[in-house]
Length: 337
Image 1 (tube, rainbow, N blue to C red):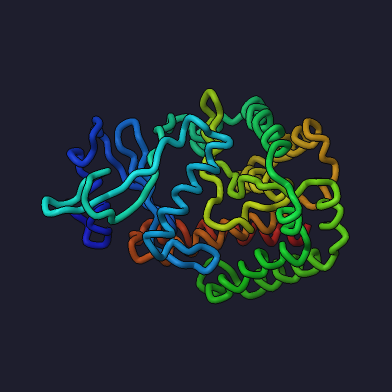
Image 2 (image 1 turned 135 degrees about the horizontal axis):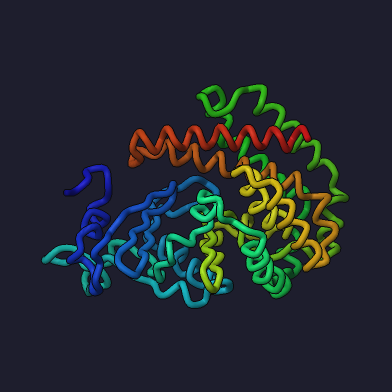
């Protein structure tokens, strides 16, 4: 049955007959920027025509470009997972996946991962172990060593550049203050801490001088990791270079924060301790709390954006607001510790 709140092509893609391969179990997952269809042994990801300022998918041309970037960038860590650019076309007979008619949308096709091994599920089952984190570290250390870190990228590690991202988060969420997710006092505490830390430009310069500003993943948390064999660290940031050109501490701090958020602080500490040991990046520790605060605030912001999407149902909206509240609480904890 079609959902009037969804684009026609998404309704079309929820039919088994739309695919050239067996698709007995089609399900739709939404984020604030994507429609993701799980169809048989494939996953199809389509970008919503949104413009948040820091992200602009407002035109078909831009959506095509960022689909191409998504394939290119994610193949760094997942070369066999990201398959191809796909289209939805339309002609006199209707919609078609990869047809010969007018292109309505561009998307990407991925191989479907083992959902039982998604890191979030493993964590929820109480089965996450240190050996899983060791496998992640084994991938990350050589990834960061090989990642680009030239002059243009290095500049994104300056306090002035980092402040663009951090302060933008505050500007984009201040309108939500008092809506049940964050109080004015908590908001002010987090803002004050962040601005004070950003005032220490020498700390950021030390990281630049150490060569720790790289073309990173940018969105490395448990929802983007599959603990299969091999481990997949997928769905990196493709839509804005300033979120991906960052301190390695901001990248690994994202996953460490996520472990804290799920009540796994001992494993979070282990992950950071082992990463520092394997990478030799001792200077990471001075930046870690700041970047954890930044990352949990980003997660809160995204949850609020998702809750504000008219295509999202009331149950999802309520869950997102509660998730945002918990992330804001954690941000305050980092800001006051």
